[in-house]
Length: 72
Image (cartoon, rainbow, N blue to C red; front, side, top):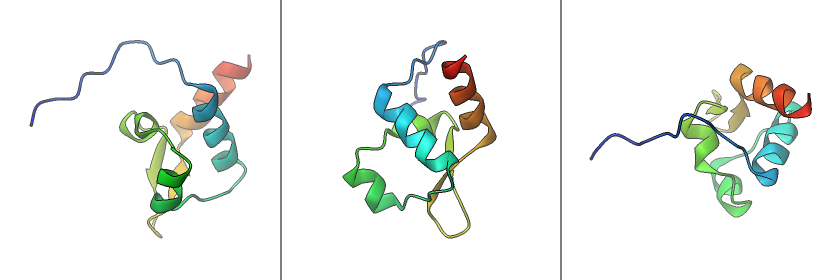
């Protein structure tokens, strides 16, 4: 299996930003729920979300910075 290519610039979709905002509000998302809501794997691959100790997806500091950049 090869290395995953990441474009140098990341433009989140509206759905990706909404998912990050929900996570920032403290809402944990389980992996099955993430699949149901089509949570982008790009957020996980780029480190904007990570699994917490319970195995749910939670926003990272990098994800919070992305939201702040998009809102400025």
